[in-house]
Image (cartoon, rainbow, N blue to C red; front, side):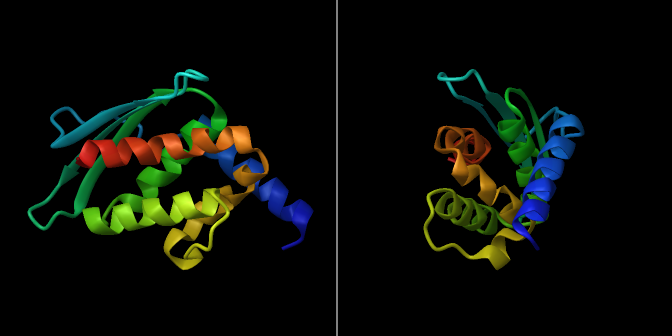
Length: 141
């Protein structure tokens, strides 16, 4: 893909997930939940998870408010971890963190999340993209 096409796709995906977030329904009695908050900008993510006896994420829900990057990342994250084991979800989280920090990451494991690599061009926004992932980790600890 050409750089301009990739940039357009990046914008399109972020706006789509921001305006039409996936898995945005609250889970009423979750086994795991956490609230993530960025005091610098006010972004917030509330995350709920239900896992089965094999520690596979069966349900995931989030609600929040904030910038397009934080909310779109939360939406994409929920899609990427649903049906994965807790261990797999945390591995994806680590690969996402590596990608955001400019480290070598497993893009095959990240799949659709790779589109968010463009956030790295805006260092001040990296925390926005990591908020939902930190909240995931908090919900599981």
